[in-house]
Amino acid sequence: MSRHVFKFVNNLRIRWKMTVVVLPLVLVPIIVVGTVVGWIAYQQAYLGITQTSKDDLDHLAAFTVDLLDAHNQQFLTYQEDRKAATEQELASLTNLAYNMVEAQDNLFRKGEIDLESAMQAARNALKRVQVGETGYIYAMNSKGDLTVHIAREGENVYAEQDEDGRHFIRTMCKAATKTEADTLLKIVYPWRNAELGDTRARQKMAVYRYYEPWDWIIAAGSYEDEFYQEANLSKGRIMSSLTVISLDASQSNIPKELAHLPFKNSKMIAIARTVLNLGPVHPCLGVF
Image (cartoon, rainbow, N blue to C red; front, top):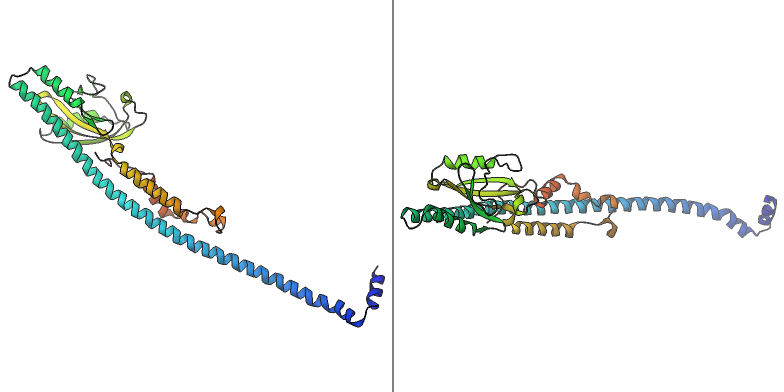
C-alpha cells in the first residue's frame, strides 16, 4: 500500500509535491495554535464572567442586607410603638371596667339595689365588652375564683399554668392584693384557651387592677397577634422585595454554583430570620 502511495506521489508534478509536503507543515501548527488560543480565550472569558457574576452578586447581597436591615429597624420601631399603644388601650379598658364595677357598688351602698343585683349588672356589662377579635374582660377574686368570664365563670383557676408551666394566676392574685387600689399591673404569658377553640398557644397580654370592696381582680386581656396586622403586611412587603431581587440560575447567565451566593451572607441570614420569621418574638408586640 505504501509503495502505491509513494509511486502516486512520485508521479505528481513538482508543485503538487511541494503542496503535499508543505501543507501539513503549515496546517498543523495553525490548528494547534488556534486550539490553544481558543482554549485560553474560553478560560479567560469564563473566569471574567464568573468574577463579574461574583461581583454582581456581592453587590446584590450588600443591597439585600441594607434592605432587610432597614425593614428590620422600621419593624423594631413599629413594635415599640405598638407595645406602648397596647398597654395604654388595655389600661383604659381596665380602668373603664373598674369604674363600671365601682358605679354598681355605689348604687348598692346607696341602697338603690342589693349586692347581688349590683354584681350581676357588673358581670353583664363586663362580658359585653370585646377586646380585639377574641379578647375579653374578666374578673376573679384573690382565691382564683372566676367571678366574671365569658366561658368559665364560677371555676377556680388559682392553680392554672400557662404553656411554660408558670402559675400566672397565682402571680396575678398575689401582686394585685399587695398593691394600691389605683395601681395597674400587667402580665404577658403564652396561653391556649381550649374552651374558646384555641388550637395553639399564643402570647397573651393582660392589664389588671384590684377592686378591694368586692375582692375582684379586674383584667382586660387579648392575644397580641390580633393587633399587629400591619406588621404582617410589612413582612409581606419584605418577602415581595426579596422575591424581586432573588436570582434564578436556570433563567440567567450566571453559573449555577453562584446562584445562591448572596444568601450565604451570615449577616443577611440573621436579619432575614429576625424580620421574616419574627424569631424570637418578644412579648407585648401587639396593639389594641
